[in-house]
Image (cartoon, rainbow, N blue to C red; front, side, top):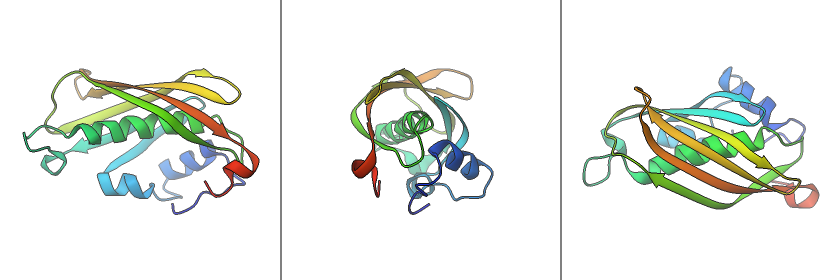
Length: 151
């Protein structure tokens, strides 16, 4: 997915990604995560973390956790936008709660508050046993008209 089709909503595009009609975004291919579900106000991203995702101490790099949480929250927020609208992340915060090495992770992003211009999202990142590995929050700003073009 090099550029978004401004005549479709992000929810429609997300569903096409899941169905294989559109490719996963470049960053998803680079890191290895994938969008597994999307609905209005919520998105789930998964990652099968391996040794290639490790930091020098051998645990999963915090930036990888941040990336999958950011993707899940961004897609959750974007899923509520109209065709031609876009958004920008204003703030992102991650709490790392326990170490993780390798295995399956699920990041569930959802909207906490959606105003006309600014919204708050959150994400829990859990391992295959349901242990909370990280929790993230993000503030997003909706872009419309000229501000949304090309984004």
